[in-house]
Image (cartoon, rainbow, N blue to C red; front, side, top):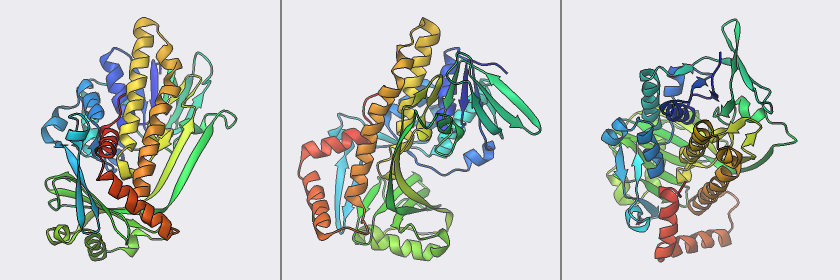
Amino acid sequence: MKTQVCIVGGGPSGLMLAQLLHLKGIDTIVLERQSREYVLGRIRAGVLEHGFAALMREAQCGERMDREGQIHDGFFVADGATMHRVDLHKYSGGSSVMVYGQTELTRDLYEARDRMKGQVIHNAEDVTLHDLTSNHPSVTFRAGDEIIRVECDYVIGADGFHGVSRKSIPKTVLREYEKLYPFGWLGVLSRTPPVSPELIYARHERGFALCSLRSNVLSRYYIQVPLTDAVEDWNDDAFWTELKRRLPDEVAARMVTGPSIEKSIAPLRSFVAEPMRYGNLFLAGDSAHIVPPTGARGLNTAASDIQYLYHAMVAHYQRGDDSGLEGYSAKALARVWKAQRFSWWLTTLLHRFPDQSDYDRRLQDSELAYLFSSEAAQRSLAENYVGLPY
């Protein structure tokens, strides 16, 4: 098989890049290890930066998002019994975020690829990258008993943290930075009306909690738990009881509970790989960087990678301008590290750490008090939350 750009990974990052390039006449093939059903079954974040929403529209995939997604102009931070509202619209110069489930977003991208007869190959096993530093890289994969080779100009590694792409860069070239947090998030999805029309981030002596939503009838809730906990340790009643303990009484009193339709524990980690380019391989999204979900930066940081790659590829193929490709890694990493800083800061501010001293706790108190006494601090929070410029 031959193509111009071979994209490894059929999640939202890979699909969006394929769709954007297709609209500019650039040929792509997407390889995905899992089935489409598996990809669409993954429950992930649903808070989109305004820049991500604009990319979806440019990719001609934003119609249902604009119809069904919810514009959020702010969110709440609960500290014990006190509720503070962060006015995103006011402090970010009129911007906002879009709440739209990643599953639905991925479904929209798949449907767009189908409409345009884009090539997305599922169940691609044993994917291997070859000759990445040459002018003729290739990717092989197994389909059943057959080994298929894709010859291309460029390879995009959008296959996540555990994918093959980053591992194809020699250890002598790659440098990895990682921070592991001593807790995880237990998340529950329930077919219940959300307790609040805007997200509630809760700081409590028992641990962090988050009240989120996917729609007017679908809620997503999280509580901080030790890494030693397993999903089996938490039945639905235990989860709802603990969640309510960490919320202000007036919020807990109006919460509607119900059976969980999905329950999982996600450990929190920060991770960055440098560089994000090796020869004609370009990393994007979770293959190169991961952030704690606290600041909703994961998918959104992947979108900025796609934005940079998209424009760099268009400049190369349409104008013979390779400056965007040459500068991709440095440009993407500059924004990645800002997202890392913001996610680390918000995680540190709102969580209870097992080795936290009284001094650390008082610093948290002071940081939160400063945040809501300073318009400059709230402006900084809002600017990062709605998304820094590309």
